[in-house]
Length: 459
Ligand SMILES: [Zn+2]
Image 1 (cartoon, rainbow, N blue to C red):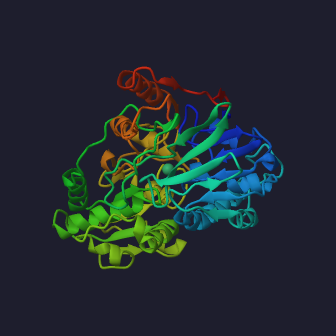
Image 2: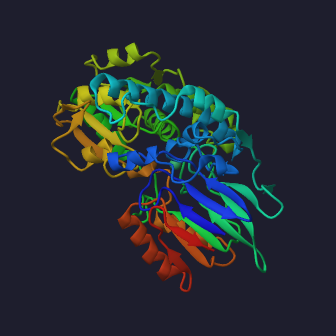
């Protein structure tokens, strides 16, 4: 059995791990690289032949795990994509939206002459996405699914976002068989929205995500800081912009705002959800109620979309019109790492005014505009124009959908015995190294590997 790390090695995007065993080639996740240009350029080079794959196991719908699927199909892949029902639903609109962005980017490059290709081509189009969606095959939780006689896998709830799963594979060895567990993106069990991760079954090898391998997140959701930023900003007449991932984070933030309004922690100001994708995702959260952690006090789950509390903006014009408003309000918009989408024009308008505030609620990958804002970058640009950053910039860690190092160790400890080896991926260098040291300390004798981009691990 051989693993090759075609993405998410020493970085957090572009999740693609190739597994080769008993004559089969299976890809675990097919994500887009995001962030700095040298990473994004990797989306144009497929480091293996797409048409030789026998299938893709998809852990969840986030674009850095699913956004490469239509490109694979464009390059000749036509085998099953196995995932949960909710993941398939989310992927439908997320991949269509991603295709739209790819086409827009290519058009923009052609108009402005930015591309090295002439004419610039989109990575994929809506047509490729339609063909991709036909390959989705739903796999039920906890039941072994046979790829071949000797290669099987099963899904477990990962508690990261709606539909997210971790996956255990059983593959043949000389003396019988072994198991490998891919954590995918792992939740931390503190979401008020979705159910916690399931306990991991005993496995020989674990491929563990390391996004927050160097961090401890707050254990309690303390809404005081959130409320304080909202009140301070609105009382001075400012606007609060919250860049949020459309799936998961946007709903968690809506839920928290609803709670703060109910408990009268914040003043009544208008709250806008300005992301068609977040609206679709909110609807999906209502549909797959068996994944939702119900809290009877959170009434909004019954009417999340057009209540008195939130207004979902429809067209692009409504979105632009909101940037002209001088009334204090909260706007939740995507993308969460400020890599594109409607949040760009809200920020362009609000950043140059010290009355306003921006609140980050999710992980900001190196080189993204979100991370530049967080780090206090002075030379900040949107759509190639310099934008002065005078608004206050805040980060709330409590909405994170990832496990921190303690959560990850606790999760592994739920196995009856530690695995033989742990392979760390999906993290930036500092996080990987910190988590590696923690594992060595907690599980003496366990072999820990940190693969580089395109490196191979033979098991
Ligand atoms: Zn994710």
